[in-house]
Length: 122
Image 1 (cartoon, rainbow, N blue to C red):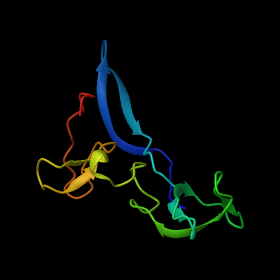
Image 2 (image 1 turned 135 degrees about the horizontal axis):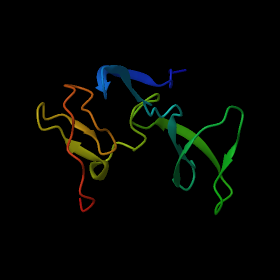
Image 3 (image 1 turned 180 degrees about the vertical axis):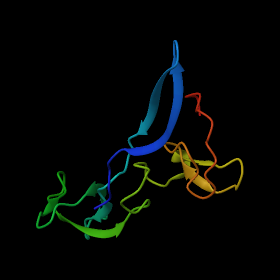
């Protein structure tokens, strides 16, 4: 299980008024997606669903009543910084290393470059 405790980024001393020293601590809570999402498929109809699996649970298609069987894990593999599935509409290209990264990730996992904020239109 990944550690989701806050990460200490920096401590910076600064002065208040006449010589009073304080320490500013910046803490970042790293968001990690701990659950793996699986692609399930009904063998006869070929209908599919994407969901995290619970141990021992049986998944049934609402419309056909067929049992859904796990086919594969989806990307990103858990645990991951991103909760979005790896599909073209959820990816962007890093400006420095040209690797595909999730839209919901602020820093490139390959080169560490901070990504610009999205304007919400793309």
